Length: 394
Image: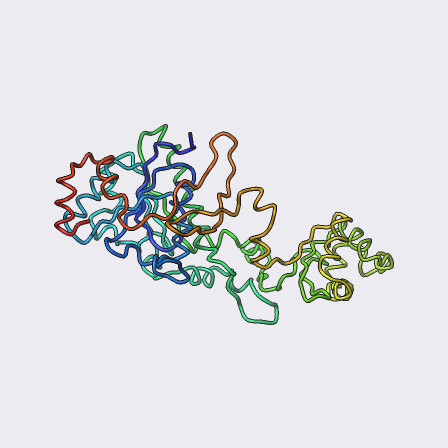
């Protein structure tokens, strides 16, 4: 038994945000059918880096899915999609606004086909508004949201976050919206559409930047790795060329930091007496910490700080993340068989006590489940499937 056993999901999406949303539902146990073009399938399958001709991105975001290859440019293919929509609980798409309408499958049309359907629509700027038609990728959302202006060294250029944060967050918001709409359906009996945008998802992560600007006229901008509100809380270089992040600046943590440094005189310095005064003299207090860090190797620093109960961490490289025993204990690093290959990837992130999430199947081959889905969802006979194949619709 899984959380979403019996739930049928059609995934028409591409690249990251939409497939990631559908992946979450698949991890929760939903039957997710990925609709993609016959032949080479979704374009993202060919994006580097890859293995055995398949992009590593697609291994992750298209696990726990079945592949149904349909040519949606053909009349027969569109008719099949309409039949599938009539049987589905959820439809996920991340085309530019208006694309589904041009296919004759906008919200009003699919709602008429299946009044219980929940339709998740993920786009750059939302389904309406003056920018709805503007092209958007993750980096565009980072730039327009202010996230880039808040990221990077204070004396350097704006920097992108080191992951497709807006895509992944939008996928999570869409999954959350779908679950909320499904819950509402239990009461109303009707589905609804979920409208999620990359820009709004990015803006949701701006912390206090919006109220600070609106109330006080201040602009939150780049501070490097510093904590904006306490000091010393930053990333410092160590003797062995590594970096350690320390969160040791509030009035509870600073005495512990000083004990780890074995420099009790810092507590008597009037500049460092309170959190407010340390912020005013940030350069001085961070300078003392930086000098201490450079005198020791990273592991010794972390050991001393942890002994005093100071939150800290050595900045890990990816090889260290992959070997992290805590992540392995929690199943956060998984290895999934794909033909002759074993593909390591991120595991499930949400842990439920009674209906756990799981990775049950790898990335499907293009069209691998054509016959299975058409038989089970629509009751097609072999002759009907063969006719569609001969027409080039599959």
